[in-house]
Image (tube, rainbow, N blue to C red; front, side):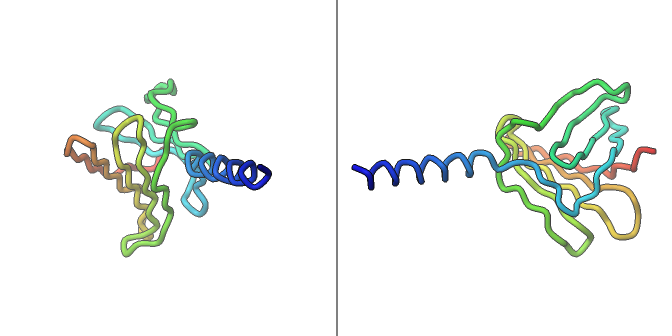
Length: 123
């Protein structure tokens, strides 16, 4: 009985850890970048990412959402942050080039649509 209880406890802990794959930017820069096409500001904080309107109100907050495949890694064009959000049905990829302060953003949807844009750093 004790072995079964221990196995259930371990499985529960593993499930919680997998589900709670969260936002940890690591070496990826924090700050705000403007998507002028949508009048949106992407805000990267230490433990969260939000999409704001240019007046500061929140369009979308990734805190508490189901984030999968979270990766921060070096790439040939710079530091790359990528993840999938189940609630939005989108895969996000942000590249911080080594040569300027902008971000390159690419979004792929579950429906097959893609969106790419260069986001200038907001001052």
